[in-house]
Length: 162
Image (tube, rainbow, N blue to C red):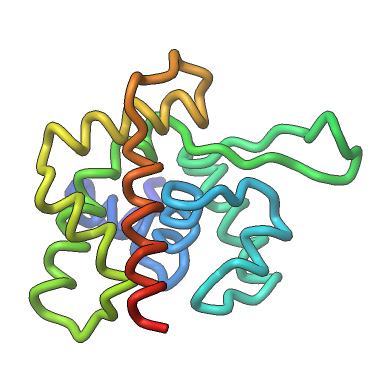
């Protein structure tokens, strides 16, 4: 028996990603350097609770959006990585960020990455996905770093708004 409400791809996507925290966890893995549970927990701007984070990581792993491997430097730690399926969410997150820029009162420092991705369009999204494949999947390193560009713009916006 099928546990999904329907076979509609929009419905199935919402059933996978439509709760309050799943895309936030993917965003934090995608745009940040946090790869361990404790880092994801303490660096969450939205203040995710530890039990919610643990649940979402398990759900995302079961859905094939996040992979988990033991950290060789510490027996009790795990390293979380984006899978190809979650890397392919870059265009969706870029569109969501662009929509948020136009229709919500987002702050400058938290909008700057969305603005750069919206302005850069599909070519920049593709370069960002290549870099994420390098960082999370072990693909060859691209010549230029979109991540460094996004981080630099974010840090500049934070400095301007102090």
